[in-house]
Length: 254
Figure 1 (cartoon, rainbow, N blue to C red):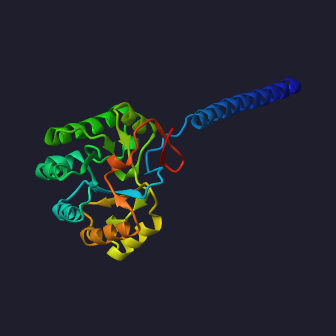
Figure 2 (spheres, rainbow, N blue to C red; figure 1 turned 180 degrees about the vertical axis):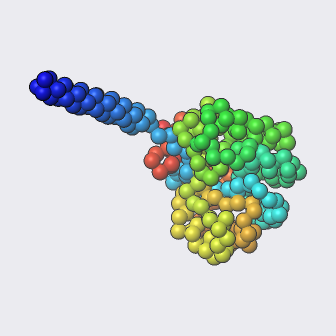
Figure 3 (cartoon, rainbow, N blue to C red; figure 1 turned 60 degrees about the vertical axis):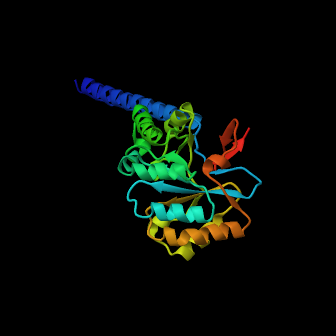
């Protein structure tokens, strides 16, 4: 009787070991499959700057909240005969329609910065498409032109966002120089930061509502021009044709 009980105990232990081993194998296999799938899926990278030998760069302004400084910035740009790119959130477009028209009338790019300024990577593909489409429709209604440039709020993106934009004939545009104007640095600090990172094909991020941007903008323009660069809108810096982006986000023609 004692022998039988011992045998059953051994069988139970053996069964438990086999069960644990099987579960571990399943988990390991599933994890490995997930890793392989992740590795095999190429990372879609937006445009951060452009591959060019010409000393050209682009200024861009994101507009999501506030409007106190927009006309001042437009006047400064006019004074220096500079055209730039404004990325607008639909909520901003709805609140300041006359300024949207003014931006377009003065010859600047009007880009899409989403409808509600969400974290785009957290949205489903359909939700992303709606964010893009709603803002495009609002801008087109006021300006007569459909945006072809998109900047993701917070700079956050994923593969499906880049692909959705490509499917809609649009470019996903980031930046390789952040002025950090949203942190309220001094104009001198902004100029220094941009000078240190400036290179042919650079795209510079600024905001229409940052405290020191109006004061800094003339100094930034003069510094860039003093370095021998021409400032153009993003639409003018992007080359036409089939392209890819490298691991740094440099846009390169094939």
